[in-house]
Amino acid sequence: MESEKILDHETTLEHALDVARANLKEAERLFEQAKAAHAAGDIAEDRVLQLGALVELAAEDLKRVTREQ
Image (cartoon, rainbow, N blue to C red; front, side, top):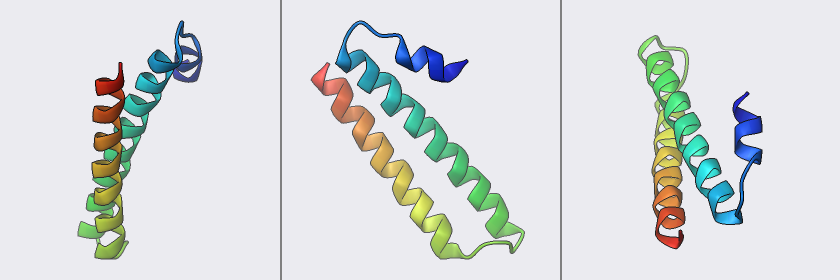
């Protein structure tokens, strides 16, 4: 199970790195789903833009955690 994998770390920074990676992966998944839903007319463009911003934020967080490690 992936959540168990996140909990098994020797350091706080290792945990932070795994969490940041998982957050980016989830943000990208939600963004892709939103783009498809928008193309189908199911959601508004502003929601797609919000999720795009979330991907950018998650990517920045991953970079920050990587630098700290």
